[in-house]
Length: 330
Ligand code: CP
Ligand code: NVA
Image (cartoon, rainbow, N blue to C red; front, side):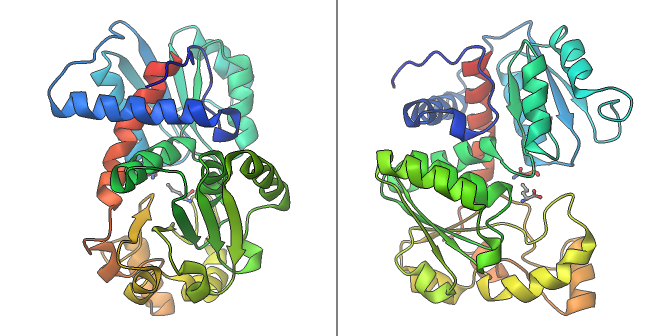
């Protein structure tokens, strides 16, 4: 593992990191995972504390930060979507300076990317992006670790993202594939492709790394030969319910089915950042069934529950990779 000094760095989006730094964080996470499995303690940051600000809800990201902090010997304070003054009674700049005086690192999940960037500008301790509308960088490290475990490498791996590729997960996957010399295909109607500006940035990166970035509207052509098929929910946190009808209409042809998996090839695996609407065991899933008659949404239950689905290892890897980010940047 190469040694990189990332101490004091913010972790806001992967565009800010070199391929070597990203690779280092993934390898560091693999090392932490191995230690955890073997019961080796890693509580080297005893006496330190972190703040977790969530302006949107979370299961994985919050738990990953809390468990990883504890494993590193740190305390964690959780501020829920209604429990802090941020934005309502206190500016981001003031919050940053208050929290940075008490904590050794700050995680922030919210809406616009600009908010987390502003928090970082005013904070003298590292700020970690736990998801914004535009990017979800900690998710990407978990995805890279999972892909590396599966295929033994990242370079050249063909990842096809099906669904709304303009949002945090789609944008971030395109960036990370460009950085790591992978092949990224956004398989979606054109209006769901990432912004031209982000595409141009990624194409520039791809020239240096040998990555391939392409776009395909046809779900069959778009998935042939894929190593990974990745999808996300069709309506993200913070979006109004009024967009469901259009999303269902536009994205139903891009649902990940067993036919799509078979079209990709026998070794293709299924990934999803989660949470997922693959059955009727959620309130929203049942509401959508009632309104639009769908039993499953972005992925069929058959694919989700199949041996080709590696979503729960991917979820576990959130913890190991977030631990690596905190360890490296504090
Ligand atoms: N994948 C992910 O970020 O999950 P949570 O919303 O549960 O944190
Ligand atoms: N695109 C999803 C990702 C959840 C982890 C959302 O923003 O809700």
